[in-house]
Image (cartoon, rainbow, N blue to C red; front, side, top):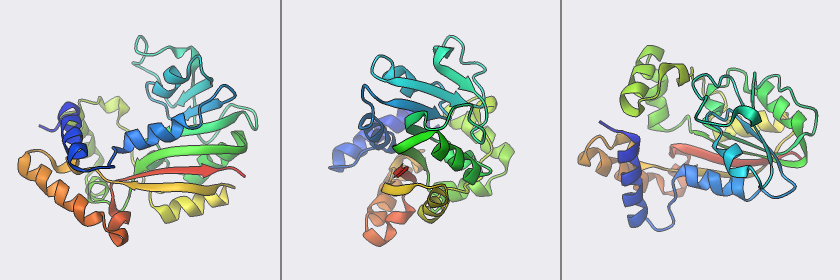
Length: 238
């Protein structure tokens, strides 16, 4: 059984043995925090349980946006959350200085429409910070080959995430070339794009963990970094 608690323990073990390495969520959180200040207006696009909204409360104006909040009552304060479609955001032009989005791009059937909306509601100079799987990584390739029903069963088996919160994946904005192409077309300019590895996705046992570490060492080489499992990026609206 590979659960989140075990993954976190193994990530801590890998970080202790790999100076400078940080998990993708830590890289993403640091980039988000860098743009949270008293004047910030934040949209957490595809916010789930709205952790960013909770962290920003009292420091900046923040709104969480997602397709559904069913089942979250009692877990989050819904007063700052809005339900809807990323392709038709119910906000005025130039409403936000920062859009944060994690584990969302892989689910976009028409990313060009969502990105156009992001550009519309961002003020000039505003930034889009995101975390998403890399379509070129073996984990993503395996996920794409698996039938949808099997994907949902595995997510429940591994992470105990209910089927209602397991959404269809498309991976249409999940390579650096696709991101550059789609976001440039929407009016964004790339500021930073990080390839972030993680050896724990194979760590069903000690041998799997060691294999994951070996793959990370191989993809540390400059020409192979494009095969890391996560993409963390910052794009600016000029």
